Length: 200
Image (cartoon, rainbow, N blue to C red; front, side):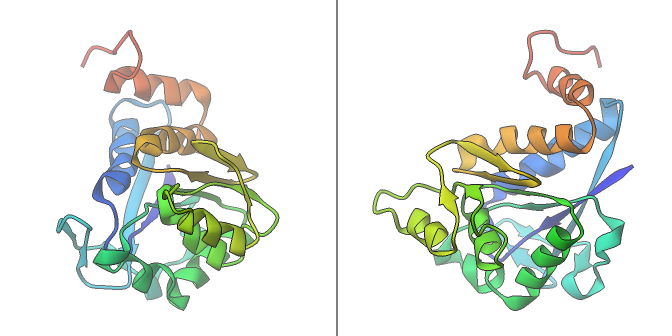
């Protein structure tokens, strides 16, 4: 079974995190090739942007990168403390370790920014949340990324996306990259994203 590390920062966007647990959870229930998710963070309890609190299964200091096949990073809100964790060296070090090991890395919304800060996106195509004032895309450019005005961008083993509306697409893309298009379709059908849902 493949394993995904879901890396949660304080102030993470709950919906963006939940798509990974849901899609991979459904893969274990109905998929041809199941994928497991393990949550991790810097704190014993991690509060999301909307006050949903998670007790992570692992602390960053406990993580063995070799135990995982991919890394998933939801975005979050600065007002809820997202960048305090997301830009912390502990976070950036884990991100670099996954990248150096050739693992797939999937981010949603401003989850792309810690990827950029860690140095992964230099000369890579990427996207992030398009604030009207361009602040976040400007940050991404400042990290050396070639910013694209596209909902989801894949460059090699790195997935970035614009925001919550892209979340399920990112999760399904990660499932496909870890397993197969047939497995992705099977899970999409079961979850009702395709017109011929499976019988439960």
